[in-house]
Amino acid sequence: MGQVIVITSGKGGVGKTTTSANIGTGLAAIGNKVVLVDTDIGLRNLDVVLGLENRIVYDLVDVTHGNCRLKQALIKDKRFENLCLLPAAQTKDKSAVEPEQMKELCGKLKEEFDYVIIDCPAGIEMGFKNAIAGADKAVVVTTPEISAVRDADRIIGLLEAAELRNPTLIVNRIRPRMVKNGDMMDINDMIDILAIELLGVVPEDEKIVISTNRGEPAVLDMNSWAGQAYRNIAKRITGENVPLVSLEVEDGLLGKLKRILGFNN
Amino acid sequence: MLQMKNNIITIKGNREGLLIICDENVLWDVIIAEIKERLIGENGHFFKGASVIVNTKARTLLAEEVGELWKIFEGSGLKIKCIKTDTEKELSESDNDQQQIKEEGLISTDHVNNKPTLVIERNIRSGQNISFDGNILIFGDVNPGAEIKAVGFIIVMGRLRGIAHAGIFGDETAWIMSLKLQPTQLRIANYITRAPDEEPQKPEIARIYEGGIICEVVENVGKYVENIGGK
Image 1 (cartoon, chains in turn orange, yellow):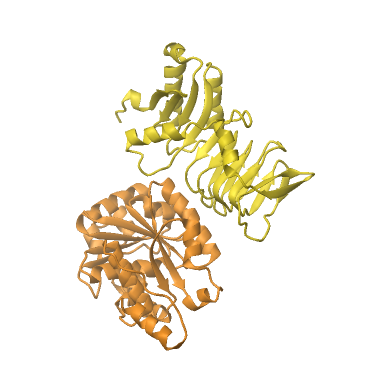
Image 2: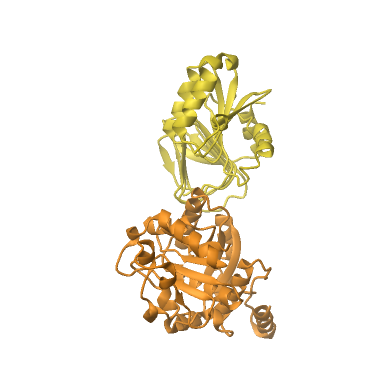
């Protein structure tokens, strides 16, 4: 029996979809059977980020309405045999699916897969309720901005109310140099407010933009900082104890050396 | 679903009085009916005069529900000491937990004012509202975007960064204390103020003084909390 993990944030644009795609791909790359489920009905993106848009025939709504079998709607990834995507419908809206149906669907998926990663839409309405309905665990994504942290706090409260206890946190798009200069919230400030366990920190990385546009998750790019962070997060999800990527920025040769060492651990 | 009748509420006695633990998965109406039947009906005379601590486990009560509970006990010769919620994870480890609740639940307010105190042991997050017809004591943080409203006073044994309103019905003797008083806004009775910009280094108490809200450093937090215990 696998686990269902929902990736959520409350605020839009903090990187839920990118995170879902990278964690899913990262987990598949180390040999797990993974299915990614896009629950952002009407605004689907996950297929684009994975570069699988042109293969969609059936979607989540077709499955829940019984227009097709579950197997028919699952799209195999082009890179990994053991990675599948269940895309969202683009022409319907969030009310096309009920939380009960999602629960049933997640139950079926986790019989077949080791990890069911659910990409949650922004907001706290129907789409959010659907996305968390069948989840066993939750990962909250935030960026180092007060507005994103505020929304993450709200989401954690709602997750607790829905009996999803002990969510973990991913801090996305952090810029170590700005943090060092005191221009950006640092990780301790965020942990202090949110009071949940840190799953990983993903640095701001231009390569993410490139990889997203190409439909190739950054987690497969061995030269990307963010990719390295996502690889570590995937390992942590499987239970491996991986130290955080060093984000220390120091000038001079010693600093550079430290960075390289941090990067390689 | 089959529900064993005596699981709806669990009644335990100790030297301080009765502890009533309510199952959080049962509808509130059912719990009320059960309390009425077991404590107040024909079987109820046994408990007369006892003081009661109600533990609602993971359930947070609405103001009306608290009122309802209050009325029932008031009309029955039982004395409510405090209403407690706990949203700890290990709800299932009943025996150990209840032991703990017994120890911790002995907080009443008799010696500070005549109002009951709601004790909460968790962080209050953005978007969550707590309002209570009495005092509120929180062991945890109150995050920005959260709102705490009490008819009496408020104590936050943690950071207070949301909005706190003490004395909502106009009690100007109400006060707000926190280990780190950094609220978005402070309200006492009909007064409203913003928090000072500098970060507090010590616990502070806010109260009304000569027509405005003032904040003072509290050297001995224990004094206030002890008072609630009435010991």
